[in-house]
Image (cartoon, rainbow, N blue to C red; front, side, top):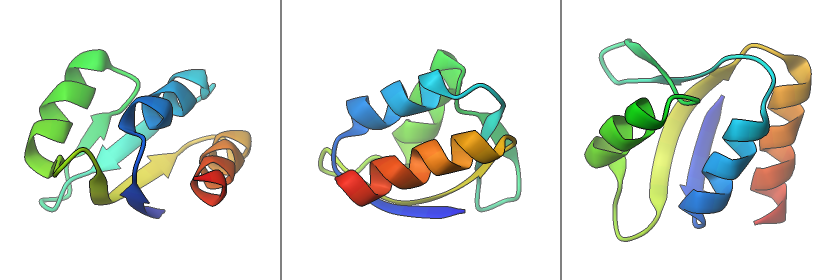
Length: 77
């Protein structure tokens, strides 16, 4: 799933932390980084973080309720 224009990065990662299954960031090279890992969050954001917002990222959530949780967050912001 492609998520765009994440304005509240801290809130986004709070949502990710509440997910029950794996949530993976897919890099442009096709690598997958575990977004539930704090180290991966910092490393991955170093490459895509811009002006306090995340303009766009591809993520994969393994559980349907996690997908819904992320979609709900995106709709509310």
